[in-house]
Amino acid sequence: MENILLSKLEFKNENQFETLFNEELKEFLTALHNNFNTRRLALLENRQLQQDKFNQGESPIFPLETENIRTSTWTANPIPEALLDRRVEITGPVDRKMVINALNSGAKTFMADFEDSCSPTWTNLMEGQINLRDAVNKTISLEQNGKTYQLNNTETVLLVRPRGLHLEEKNILINDEITSGSLVDFGIFFFLNAKKLIENSVGPYFYLPKLEHYYEARWWSNVFTFAENYLRLPQGTIKATVLIETITASFQLDEIIYELKENIAGLNCGRWDYIFSYIKKLNKQDSFIAPDRDQITMTSPFMSAYSLRVIQVCHKRNILAIGGMAAQIPIKNNEEANQIAFNKVIADKEREVKNGHDGTWVAHPALVPLAMKVFNENMPTKNQMHIKRSELTITEAQLLELPKGEITLEGIRKNINVAVLYIESWLMGVGAAALYHLMEDAATAEISRTQIWHWLNKKVTVASGEVFTSQLLDLLVAEELDKIKEYVGTERFESGKFELATQLFTELSLNDELEDFLTTKAYQYI
Image 1 (tube, rainbow, N blue to C red):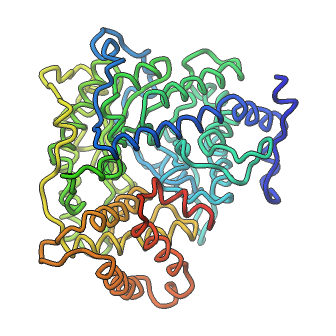
Image 2: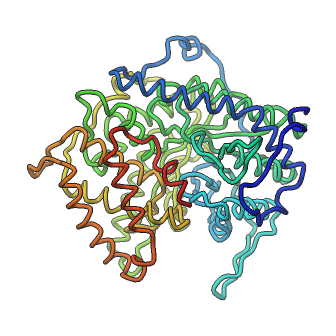
Image 3: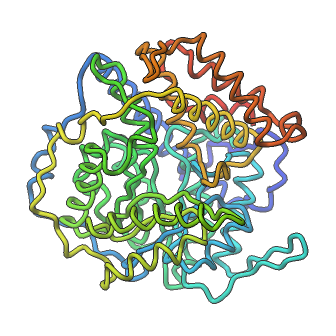
């Protein structure tokens, strides 16, 4: 512990949440930083080296050095009873009302999100930690607009998604170094709640976002082992589900599971981020052009191959394969539109369960019964780990196959409109934005602005015959801003941060090189 005594944790600004940080928690966060932050930074450098290779024309492959891991017989450690049935999971940010409503929703689990659906303002993050602490202790309640919100006798299991490895926490400095959002989010929740969760007959359960390499899974495994030893908990107490939302991770499923085999409970298919990663990693290749995002669906060959491979590998290793998000939210006073949206959800969930997925995601409590009905009718057992899908052979070429479709002015307009709306919402401190009857998070803005950048750099000709240029982008942005102003209202438009959001979107779209994440660039403004 000598390195802790020589280190100093401090807050960059006045910390109104000082009572959350006792000396023991500060020491734990310091220990995490001292032991793991340097390696995290090296992993980020490795991502850039990997991207450089792709920019030179290389493609992802199944790693040659780990062939034995893929072909040998082994399984992950058993999954605890509390996580064996995850047929419907609800996800959302960590604000107090969301936490209560999600835990009361009837879903099997709730993924409380510090990442893509949470704008990482200091207040959002720290109030989120307080909300989760209160939920774990079953003391959470809220008085709002004359209504009282409190927990019912819920059996919904809590999982927590910390920020990805690329995100920093500028408000906490250790040795005058900016800290890792991953370690801060994980560390605070784990330290405050692990023992109480175990008393509640569950445990500290996590979702891990945006892993790109099995080395990153190894990093998390080392973090978990350190944290368990620190609190004198048995090895394997922490259980994690890894989001497979990067194209490179889909080539390393066995390896990621192997690195985390003491702690892993499942993999999840993160759709929008996966498409974002697919474009980001492969965009420099000569023949690579992706169509409108609405034309890339889970039935697109490369998306179907990815989903089926997740199921096959997970079940081979005796862990769960969780499907993707239904982002629809109820449309008030329009039953016909509501039914059309719900029918899309039903079809999507039927495809997932019949393919062999063990569960699925929804973003709104109203969709929980809908998705639950589909899985109850098609999955009488707690999960489908017995369905091995061993008849499948998913190749590298299938995982990389270009989706068919076209690029349209309508698709460009939609990307501009939704990206600017979402970025503005995020800058205003709202990371889960209800836009056009969908619950959008950062993944939507990421794929939207990445496609715009991609099409500009490829100098594509859209279906109506125009060449997509920066001049055309400027024209379309101006027109979409008029529509946004009408959509949100003049007062909201003028009091918000739409000018900054538009500036960020335009800069990201016109950069010579594709920015890895818009959230890292926008973080300086919150």
